[in-house]
Amino acid sequence: MLKIQSYEDYLMSVRVVGIRFKTAGKVYYFDPGEIVLEKGDHVVVETTRGVEFGEVVVAAKDVPDEEVVAPLKQVLRKATPEDHQQVEGNREKEKTAFQVAVEKIAAHALPMKLISVEQTFDGNKIIFTLLRTVV
Image (cartoon, rainbow, N blue to C red; front, side, top):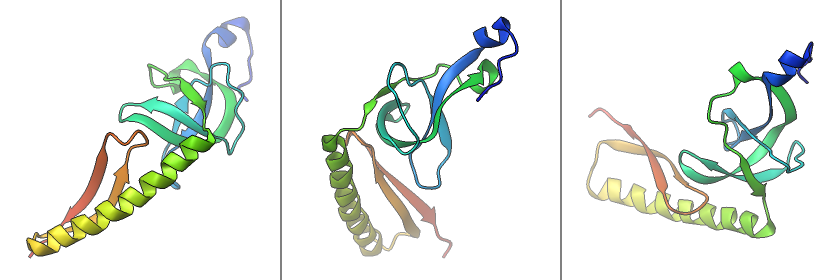
């Protein structure tokens, strides 16, 4: 917790939660708003990539303004059972897309290796990570 020394320090701080989207990924700050969140809760947030599903890895705390990348986006909601089902459905689609992509790469003898496939929570984007191989 940020130690508030003065009223001015209080005014220069922001309440945030830390959200992680991948197991070993970077932690991003979001505004929890009025939602009470604990470490381990799953949430739905708006990111530059669209609506995403993440896990609270840093409980609500006050941080100095300068530690926050503006504009600070707000947590949309705690994840619902339907959100968890959506994530599971997305994982199945990612597995299928991975297999199809590997087959296409092989069929066309492309000099690349598929590293990963990720579908955004809302299903609007599929992101393929490829590594070009030297032949």
